[in-house]
Length: 224
Image 1 (spheres, rainbow, N blue to C red):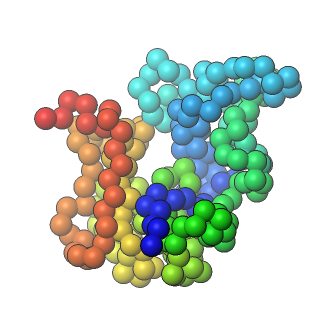
Image 2: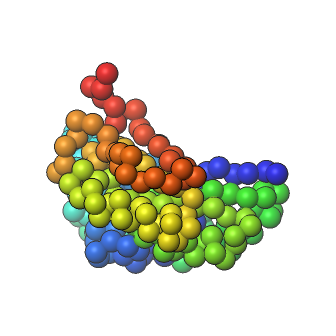
């Protein structure tokens, strides 16, 4: 069996996909796009540009460093923003992502083309904060797809009980296969204690659940 341990699927990124509103969702997307190496182009003539319209690089990386710039997902894998009346674009995903979604059927079709038998779908808040969509991916292709649950890291320390309930629901209720933990995300400006990565402790007791921890090195700055 060929198993892809790091795959992605996601709903339409132009919607709120689990956040309270599309603006909150777009802020997470903006932070991700501002940090990505794909080139920036001025829309009207394709001239090279940079990420300075998206983020203030003199500040620590986080939501508080983002600039107000009408950042928006558009279509065909592109993200656009406006600075002083000038539009800029970054081609973050392939143009085949026409409606800014990549569904379970799309992923399985790519797997078939590449000869992959099964894949594990990873999570990140800028691809959606809802576990329902990923549970449906698994239900649609139970012999081909597995998926990780996601719980907002910035809520774990201040709202532990709801966070654990969300994890229990995702794994025991929706049938997801583990937890995606991104300990750098509490550094994204939500006001919680940044001195240590979050944890859910031992209170989730499903011994069959995977915990995938994907930190950035800066997450552990100052840690022993």
